[in-house]
Each structure stands twice: as C-alpha cells, then as structure tokens.
Figure 1 (cartoon, rainbow, N blue to C red):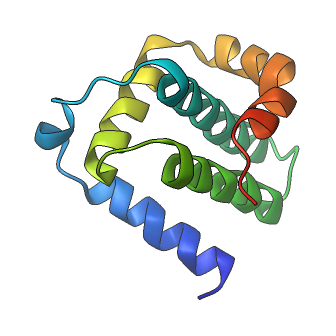
Figure 2: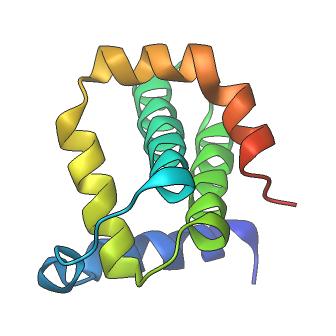
Length: 115
C-alpha cells in the first residue's frame, strides 16, 4: 500500500471513529506529549497548505508523520486517539499551535521517531 493510500485510510478511520468510546480515555506523560506533537504537525500542515506555502505532497508527508506518531507512540483505539486530538485542537489556538511547531517540531521528531 502506498504512503498516500495509507494516510487516507488512517485519516478516514480517524474521522469515522466513534467519539463516545474515546471520551473515556485520558492521556498523560509521553502519550500526551505525542498527541500534542501530532496535533501540532497536522494543524501546521493544513494551515501551510491552505496558505499555499507547502505543496500537497509536503502536506501529505506531514500528515503521514502525524499518523505514524499516533500509531507508534499513543496507545488506545483510533477513536480514542481521534477524540484526544480533537480535545487538543479545541484547547489550543491556531497561533499557539503554529508557534509550538516553530519551537518544537524538531524535538517532536527526535522524541517520537517514526523510522
């Protein structure tokens, strides 16, 4: 399966997950940090793409990294991960998240390797 298709499958799975099941999960420590990194990368990818500052291919790579961080560093079902990402997204403003990206993107990738 190609990277693009894998990303689409994972994102569709995230979007179709049942939030009711996910609401029961609370993440702490390294998993919470991985969720914050994932949220930061995903939101930044979408924002930069919308502003035409990165290509669709670059956006897909960042979204793919997000999915891999979630798969490899966060436990629980996709529904739980999706709900946690939604909570993270709703708690943080877009400017704060973009600032997080500038400060922490490299550290996120070191802390949560995808290779």
